[in-house]
Image 1 (tube, rainbow, N blue to C red):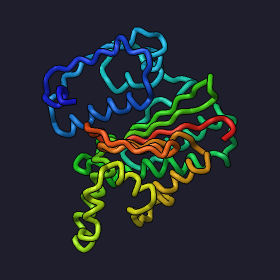
Image 2 (cartoon, helix red, strand yellow; image 1 turned 60 degrees about the vertical axis):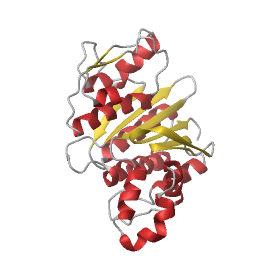
Image 3 (spheres, rainbow, N blue to C red; image 1 turned 90 degrees about the vertical axis):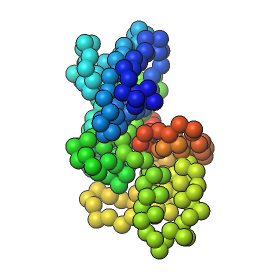
Image 4 (tube, rainbow, N blue to C red; image 1 turned 90 degrees about the horizontal axis):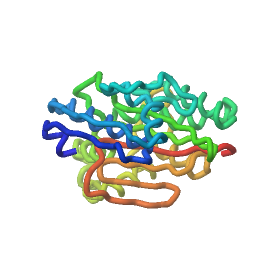
Length: 266
């Protein structure tokens, strides 16, 4: 990250990578976006994995459509919803993911209503902690991958904005009357702030179409096992709902990452 940010030529060598997760590809795109936002000259080069399975993920994911590459990108794939990007709350991506779940997990339309709510809550939330200075900068990337062996879908949505903890501190600092009461929380670790968001401590009132009860509602879908393995990473905070685990990283994530899985029969 520091090397890329310096504007120096950077070579990303993934030739020996044998396993790559869907969120890693989204994060790499988010880093590139952040460099563009800072108007830093980007000179990034790289290769592809020699491992057939890892190489296939690059080709099928649609990642190569976002970078200059001599390698062919598969136009579409039955195994995934290729990387999709947007600036605001876009019901089209929610529909794409719901149709994908209906096809792969044998779900009916009514059973995907919860998935629609989850996706719309996340992509709607991005503009509250996004780079408002650049309207046409993609604020989020979404991706879904079907694992045939486990009959489950892995979902990931990466927000390239400021991050939830940074936005919370900024918003409360602007509300002087609330600042004194919130000082202890504003000094909290990012993981603790994420946990507070999940509890509903920072809800905002909106009149936006498709909006529900916010991030706490996403957690409720994990609690009742509609989705599993819900994880949120933002800035230096990491929260895993199923494992009730919090981690504080030393190096911040550039934005916010939501990931979860859905299994056949949930």
